Image (cartoon, rainbow, N blue to C red):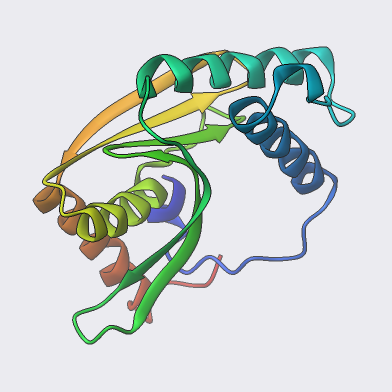
Length: 169
């Protein structure tokens, strides 16, 4: 599912859902980086606010005293230093990668594998832990990956992406 099923995904223009997602991420970053008294809910519903607050508490619990990098640019390069993929990690506290999502019906493993592989290479880590936090259900999925596992997952996605028999999605 997820990116594996949509290896040739082409991003379209964002809509109301994308704007709401931006507001949720901004609130998460406010909670993690600023004075809690100064945070603004940015027009979030009570459910969104509570879900994002759950995620912020979880990040603080797991990360402890580790520095948090918010909206961390992530570049995955090939062996010739050409960009394969670019994205932004919601929260990086090496070796933990946190991502805020709404739906737990989608498998985000391929997307996070790209981020985790790039961050593992950059930080010389053999293991990375991904934490997908679902604000709607206040649940999380935690996975540990070795560098070899991440390389395999990313390799599979790239192979599917290069397959001309797959239609763009």
